[in-house]
Image 1: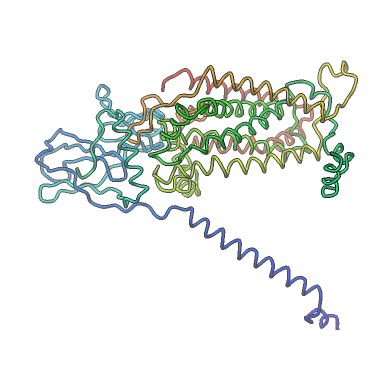
Image 2: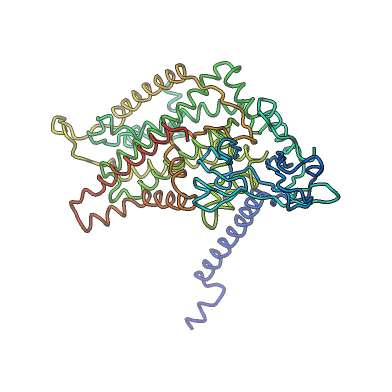
Length: 190
Length: 349
């Protein structure tokens, strides 16, 4: 009889349990959905796509020459020609972003190395870390893929859609350059 | 006048006795020593930061193309903008110093011990929040330090196991600094962190009220006849006096050492010499000394030890009840922090 009483709909304990469960479920579902939507809203859409972009005509870049290339996303890349076979193996494209914590490295000709001023990282001309935290962690400068087609050199880099916000950023970068960035590299694809 | 009071009394049924009980927390006599008033100092400075921060936000524009010029406008063109920005900047510096000193006072007097472990952890969260709000603050100016500081910090996050990549993308709104990054720093600095800190402060003060102020036997106590004095008005007057002193100090600093504009952020060139604010010197030097993964994990471990210190200390004291280990460990910690800070301050790289 007791068991019967417990399962009848009129049982106040069962009613109370169901009401609590429904309320909890409703709150979790409602606020949980909102939290999921807020999280998805805040999390950036997706990493930038990559694409092959033109760098230079092979004839205007002799063995031993180098240039600084800027990607559409604003990163700078040091492109050097080491050989004269006319294939992509002749070239080296090194990111100027330090793999340690993302500062910009610069070339020190007197020491024949790239140097990062943030935490004293140093890299040899091939991008291999030789001193500082990047050397301890075995981090080298990122190499971008290159290809040669019809005598033209191409590089594979991240590209971004030019939204209003991106144009805003471009203007800020341009303003920084105009404000006195000595030897500022030119725009990609130029 | 009586009618006005009567009108309010009908609608707010609080008696004078209840108000007295609410404000007349008996305060131990050692709070007459200035060293023990350091808790009120950051609270006062926090209010100064909120007031000046709201005023600065009237002109600040969080976007890469406008941020620097809006701060320059505040500093160079808006009436008294240089003064308000100076108060905000120096207020941040003093607030970090005051929170650190307060935490040190609590540590070295053992005021974190049972039953105050939870309040120690709330205090530690307030200290961490203060450091993060300081960092997000100087990231807003879009100077070289702002840009490269944000870049380094986000890449540091990336090195945190499991969640690092997610946190970095959430902070930057992308894989690297981009046009959607400054608004995130602004929202963190001006909304998320202040609200978090207000909530933590409420819990902090509530726990103090529930547990009462820690009592110590301090040198000279016998010379003071009364053991307790009233929070209102006696201790509040002390705090107001400290507030007055801080306002004079802040005004003096903002006038004699006014804030200026550093070089505009250049995403293409990291400056040859770059340093964060002084309170991050220790972390900056630590990063130079150790490989990234080790530096990040060891920093996380040190923060964890700080947070859990009341329990670690209790464990030590259960084994050696008269142990002074906490004092020696604390002194060693202070020496290491000061040494790394001074080291970073005196060298270029």
